[in-house]
Length: 534
View (tube, rainbow, N blue to C red):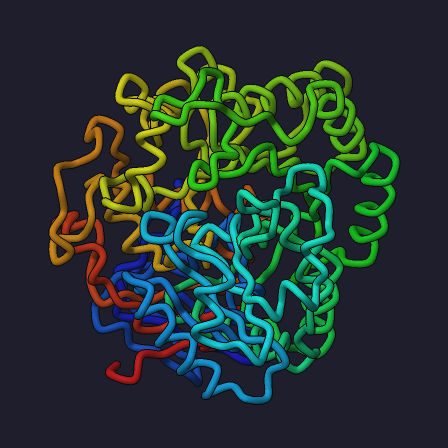
């Protein structure tokens, strides 16, 4: 039996029955006692120095493993603001990683690059003797160099459902790929080995722990992720808990989806890694014009995109998965995708009756006024507040396609909560930062950080409060991950997952929240992160 006492602390438990404490006793990874006044003795003590202590944060929509693999193997292109910067970054990365069979990059910004100016010819100027595959910041677009195009045989590939190979006026592939063709092409290219994936798991977890995360929901589980997380659990490599949402596609039937997910659920029942939900991509993103809107796009090219699942298939798949007691987790960007998902969930509830499923709609960039009230009791609003701000040139393409008449319904979080929706906060890392405190600041201010030259708040009336944000990262996120019965708050008997912060986020200006540092992260009562300055 091991005991640790955390004392001299301002503990916010997020437990409404005992909301505050000054000390907390940990025994064998669980909370044994907490209280105020004189603390008990314990062989190991952590003096919090009067600082704020919260439950460990949980990110209920993140791509932890693929993001970690990016940290380990890919060039970071997020800051590349020109073709020359992109080429220079890729060249340096290729030289630093000579042993990788493919040169990978991620994060190029759709407001800077796109179909019109990012091609195989551009990437050839960086590297021509090795295959190159670079993803945009949303991971819904990718570009290949000529060697990768040739190796994958992309010139001869037809477009799959919900995917597109961009071609020039002569019908030749330019190198740019959209949506569901990307994994098909990537599967034909040299891949990473098991050691690379395991290193990605370590680096992703370390990055998450350093920002106070002790639990996640990985929002796209395929066979690759399933295998690595399972190995991590067996070998004791996990420094946080992972819930998985297994990918289903347009090629699935209700029978194939239920069979595959049921087998995975039975094989991975947790508690550190469990598969509990089905992931649908109902549409794409505005950046490549695959977001599904109820009205035509408002910019000059106009047009629209269909939902990636038909109405009939959506109802059938969601009804079958709901009956098998899987949560349903849906990527929705445009308001047509939101409505299609809501209609599918309503059909499932009508067929199977209500149950505490924690179905979730993720992103919710644009939502029709008529649909806010339909979320109540049906689906959790799984939101990423970092995007709810004006950030040209990155925010310009989507706002142009939506049109100013609809901007009031873009990331309209207050409307969702006021209509009775449950909510949780998340990052979608590595699409954006996973730092909860930068995300929380934007949720409250609806602006970029002060040192980033912010514009005016983007519909300030849709802001969240600090209390709602912390609840969205703790109690509500734990519920979305199906582990609120032993995590998400600091309560006797619960797992000792907690964080010590360098400042009280409840007492400072919202504009200072993004500067918050996590001094210490405990997972099951053991330190998985400590700031060297503390």
